[in-house]
Image 1 (spheres, helix red, strand yellow):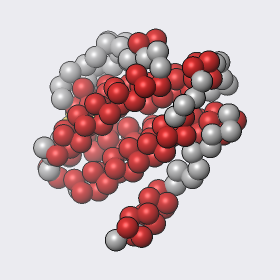
Image 2 (image 1 turned 30 degrees about the vertical axis):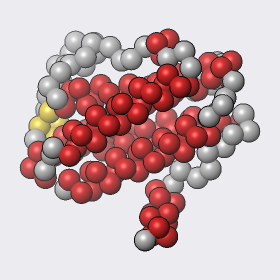
Image 3 (image 1 turned 180 degrees about the horizontal axis):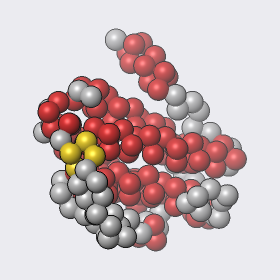
Image 4 (image 1 turned 135 degrees about the vertical axis):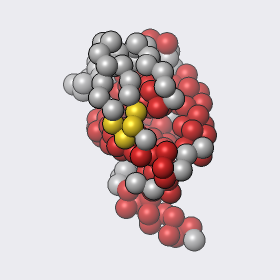
Length: 168
């Protein structure tokens, strides 16, 4: 994978995240934390899980091995999630800005949150995993938002392509 493609995938990731967060804007706090039939338990849990995955993977790419994901209870409101996510997005983009094609091919080793050392994996594959992981959980968040009458609309990559083509 080349760096331009990697940056484009991350652009898509944050574009889709922004659509979800706009749809959730103004959501009642009870709806944010209400139990849902999704793996992360609630809309807040889902948002924090996506954010936490971005954070933990970036930390691993930088050579750290965090022992835990972010605790969703640290995010009382949607605004709290957005503030942290904005900071993570800036950090992720800054990280990617320092890379080149060769850096994307470098193997990353890390210890998972259970303390188990993992086999080396090229950075580009882990970046792809991070974006794909976000896609899975965004779909779950989109279902919750749609059930609440706040559909984020289409999250297809093709929509972003059309938007960019139209914008010139």
